[in-house]
Image: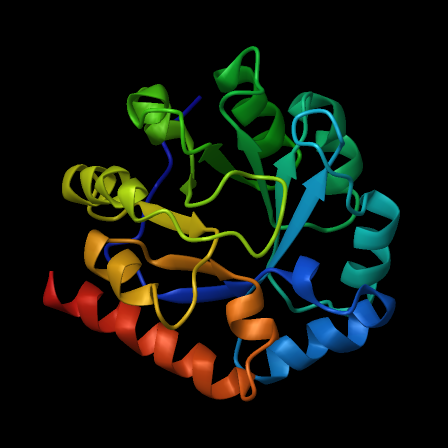
Length: 230
């Protein structure tokens, strides 16, 4: 595979996780998030095997993407067989397919299949996985996701001790998109931003906020300020 061509400079992007929304009104809740300034939407797909929970699958995703044509969708595939779902998810016009390094039997092949299907490649790490596990794959990935909670459930406490992973990646790969996910909100965004994350997934921190627009704007400003200081 060819190396990914990266932009000259990263930008701050805020992607709410819709898992924490009222799923009986998924389209309305998702549109509200975009209207309030979200840069993209993060869809958590769980299979009950890789993590002990089940969420929504491709049928739900397809319904959502068909109604929201100009939105960047990322699927976070918390599944035990990431290669199995690539073709199906790609048919839903998803923009980025993020899989776990722990789940893939052949990471370069998984990345190649994702790229050939027309989606961007994201590689995620569970908290217990060292950052060295993805180092050799960074050149063929569009983004690295550092989980700041154990994957599988929303509303967990942010793990501050994951920030050295983010800092290592940012110090060594200045234009790499680095995402954090888990317990991120107004009280923890500064740690993420200072460590070097530029893509921020936030569930309850945004969904349950009295004013989603204000929270999104403040989080983006915090991240962009840290980017500009580098």
